[in-house]
Length: 182
Image (cartoon, one colour):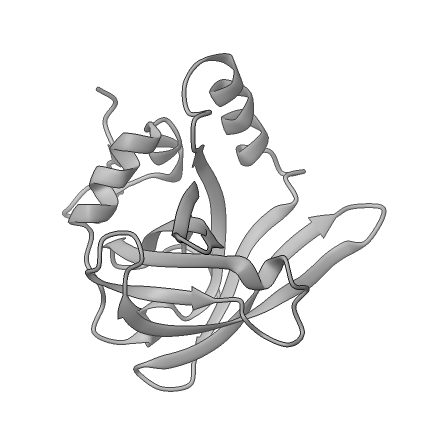
């Protein structure tokens, strides 16, 4: 099993890297999400968080998974992450950052709200990322994200699609605000 941590000079405890997370299977990330925590305040997730797609449902092994990992780590990958800003300890807002060089450049898209709530995945406390906003297209309003904290500044999230029967988990992703100047 691959080591999830890297030694950081001047830091007593090892920390999880995005590259190590990206080599986890969908099921391994699910286990990590189930063990992850929820911070006491949404301010813990404030900032310009670097995003990384980690594993896609039913495409997390083999050649397709290797190709998706390489794509997700590429500087030319469309999704750059999320910018989150808490209005209080319990509510916030934000947007996704995407970049299409030489065509649209950097864009802020899909406004979102954040709040604490019960997970649609396991019923436990989580940070809900809500895209059901009038500014978003109808298909985007059916997206439901949840995030939990793996360590201060590092969040593991699940991107889900809302259906009449409930939400279906599609993509695991990470949001990293540990080394980013906000």
